[in-house]
Length: 183
Image (cartoon, rainbow, N blue to C red; front, side, top):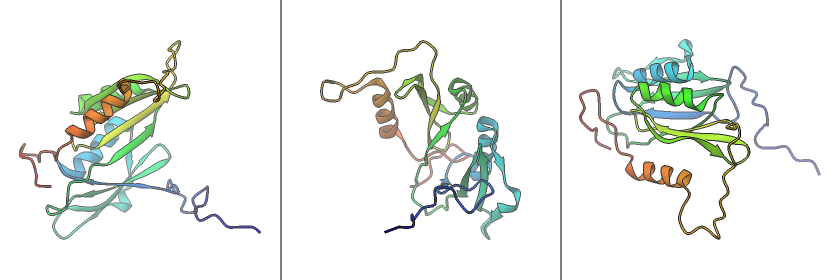
């Protein structure tokens, strides 16, 4: 018996849309427009102008930014929407350079570039809108791969500890006046 997969391994949508496309509802300094500028400066993201749509209240109701071969859709969070940070993973060629760019634009590094499982490197940061970014890059030359056995560990690894701390400390970002917006 042959079955048809529910999700095509290659999206028929084309034009940079994958089988899964993330959507970020943005609260915080400068809103979605500033977030789009941040994506351009940090990830060389490119906005799709024809997808830019403003709602009757002046807030951005839809935008799309291409990062590499992926699409991140963006909306300004309405004042009565609950705060929902995006948790995003990006494969990059240089974690340190992305961290440098992000920090220069107000982000907080939560995990410095470190060797990670599977011959890669990992870094993380929280942007000014309280979104959490995971960066996966190439292996760090001559760095030992981390070894962690959860059955033998008496404490969590530093890689694990940094994300747990960051998630516990996340809060609604301040608006452009520096006042925290209601969740």
